[in-house]
Image 1 (cartoon, rainbow, N blue to C red):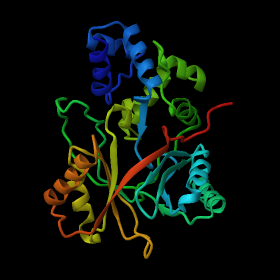
Image 2: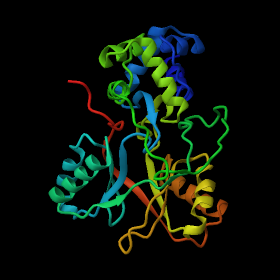
Image 3: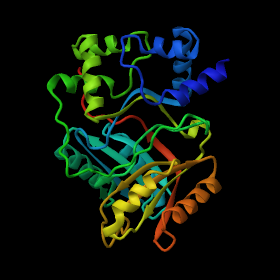
Amino acid sequence: MTADLELRLLNDFQHDFPLTPAPFAVLADALGVSEVAVLTALTRLQTQGAVSRVGAVFRPRSIGASTLAALAVPEHDLERVANLVSAYPEVNHNYQREHHYNLWFVVTAPDELALQRVLHEIEERSGCRVLFLPLVEDYHIDLGFDLTGVRAKRTRHVEAHAGGARPPYVPSTEETRLIAAIQAGLPLVAHPYAAVGAQAGMSEDAVIATLQKLVERNVIRRMGVVVRHHELGYRANAMVVWDIPDGVVSEVGTCLGGIEYVTLCYRRPRRLPAWRYNLFCMIHGRDRDEVLARVEAMRQGCGLAAIPFEVLFSTRRFKQCGARYARAAA
């Protein structure tokens, strides 16, 4: 029963998490178990690392400023540089990948000035030039990650969302406090929104209403269980980068973003002559062969057989956590 419960919690509740005073009781009713059983299982999964957090996933660049960045680090210096990059609270993902640019990380900050400050500091302290690759267009609708292959499919309607054309949502002071309180995840207690409200200086009803508004405005992309793929047996992950002609990049991005096993698909700027690629996809698989087979299927399915590309497998995870958009109250 425990294994079945854990699988359902991991697989079925990655989206549409209840915005009600006792959300874990709602999950318990759906699963036919007690609220205590749900909270115990989620706490265990989080302790084991299979669950990163339960809570909000924000749409990229919907609030604050963020970017993907990379460094070409000499092998002998990689450990030092990776550790200094990971030490920044603004860095939420930091991976070694198989490429000349061998350290890839994501930086999120309250605004563009703060973002550039972090990148400049990393460049100065690492002694490596930062490859700065902010989001230009998003072609992927995040529906979570199907762990069973049999979950009821949801409509995957993909539209291009320009990252730079639409200004970020500017949260109010109260919303900023709430974002700071939830960005690391909801507390695993019977009334998490009341607990968050106590931290943010808001009532439980106000927390729920504000989160509902942020979901409706697509600032929050989804509410639910956020899993860690590696701990769940998906040992191989690769960032696939493509050199797509600019005139068709949105069309190709929409095609790739609609493929079920593509977990991210973004357009980012070229940085010639150092970096020629303008379309990025993320793929996870049980092993390298599965990932490479999926890349080949993508090439054939979206007419990319003649398009230059590279597959950057992850070889080491230095850091993975939720993005930090605001400073928590002292």
